[in-house]
Length: 180
Image (cartoon, rainbow, N blue to C red; front, side, top):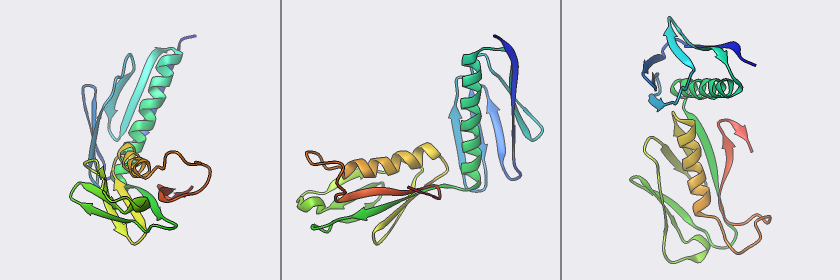
C-alpha cells in the first residue's frame, strides 16, 4: 500500500551540508565527507537547518531507500563532528611480530616467524596511530575506518588452523567506543 512518508534530519551547529544533485557534501570541525546516492523516487531538499526527505506515494522499497539514506547521512554528520575510532590489539604467543607504518602502508614483520613482511595498504582519509600493542584507526567515514581495521585483521588471518582457537594476529577490540 502506498502512503505518504517523510523523514527529517536535524543539522547541528558547526556542520555545513550541501546537496548537489545526487551527491551530499558535509563539512564539519573534524573534516569533510561527500557521498553519492541513488535517491530513486525519494525527494530530498535542504530547509533551514534540516534535511527533508519525502515521497507522496512511498512503496516498501522507497521506504527502505529512505531509511538507508537517512542512516548514511546521520553517520556522515556524526563523523564530521567527532571522528570514528576503531581500536585493534596486536596479539602473539611465540613469535613476537612488529607493526610499523611507512607512508600509506602498514608493515607487519616476523608474523609467525615469516622472513618477508606482510604489507597492508592504508586507505586515504584514515589516520593510524600505533602505541606498543594497540593500533588506533580514526576517520570521518565510518565505512573507511571499518574497512581499514578489517584489512589489518585480514592481513594476519591464519589459514589451515582452527579458527576457534585464539591465535596470533591483529584483532579489533573496540568499535567507536563499544567494546567487542
